[in-house]
Image (cartoon, rainbow, N blue to C red; front, top):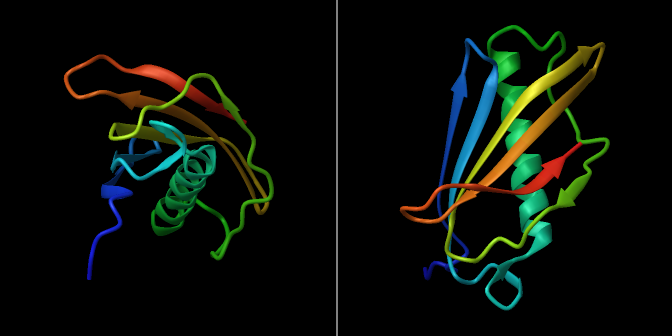
Length: 125
């Protein structure tokens, strides 16, 4: 089996005290929608997957109030900057509102180049 070179590594972490779920993704070079730029659909999929991870973490902690499965009803992404391929991406999501079967989350997405400081590249609502 040959690796595709799209996602090299994906690690997830949950901060139980702050109720924040993190995904750290090392992207390969073959993730482009535009030359040397991460495809926006992949960006949205990574944000959605992180929100799903938060829902599972909340459920396991007994804080969700209902049993999965849960589905994304709305995902809105405002792209602020291009993300160069081959980067390490940090996505953090937390609960903004929890009512009945609705969990409203807020994502903060940050791309971090190796050895450089981060920069905001997408904001989700």
